[in-house]
Length: 265
Length: 181
Image (cartoon, rainbow over all chains, first blue to last red; front, side, top):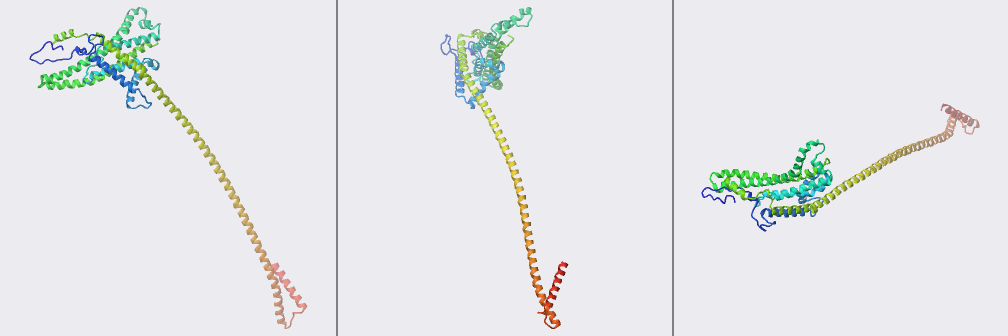
């Protein structure tokens, strides 16, 4: 802990959130590539929950769905209709649906652990998962473009047709950076930073509440009511952020694939 | 406090540099969930949606055929109804004609009967009149002779002249009454 190194004898010390929250001590296999800490463990638990939920939800599908099957169908249909088919059309939507569905539900469930009491940290708040998903989206849209326009995809992406030749000096580096560097980087950082900041904010509000109420006491308890109210409000806000970031990540993946498939390329 | 934070930041790993274990525990969940959706969930979902679409389309086709059948049945019914109506009208017309014929026949019969009865009665009257006339003639003759005998004081009964006279008188009477009629 950052403040443990400098003990303060008299005044109570406020112990705020720390970046070390995202690097908890190892539980198993310390020092190996399979080092397991509580965040990695919660990722595995989420994977198990997802497999269980969707395996059971689609095991015996009825033509007239029950309540559970109806909920599962609603979730899958949201991704299929509102993201994949809306942007890519029926045929290409079908092709890239597994990837887009995976990204949506993986990000959604990993985000939501940030507000689950007792876990309180998102599975996506460590860079690995956002990075892996962004790389998957990156490979997917480049694959989509090369497959559809094997000879012209890269040329048209870097040298957009209809631009005077001398402007390529400016346009080509911009296109290159935006397409092949900024897209995966922004995908990764948007999700990662949202989750890191969400966690830090919640920890700040709730640890401040505890500090005001327990360590200071007296009139400071009034302040703790304010921080508690903010913490509660931001917990609900984090639910919104979790859903929104999952939607944005899946939507942007579909948009990049759509741009790669577009006919002017 | 700022200094402490800086110390903490120096000690803490950079959150933008992924650790190997982080990559491992990101790649494994991604691959597992990708396989789950790609190989299991989405094919099941697609099969179910196809079956549901087929069911709905089948239902629509069935409903359409049922509607067509109902339409045909209705037309058939209407046709039969019209035929029935026409037949009923025909029968009614026929019955009316027959009724008229029967009434006319009955009237004719009644008239004939009446005529026959009248004729019979007339004949009877005529016969009775003749009978009355004959008996009256005999009666009146003898009465007149009796009366005349009384008047002249002798019998005229066997007098051939007197008998002839009476007969002539009665014949005159008959012609008189006939002329009067």
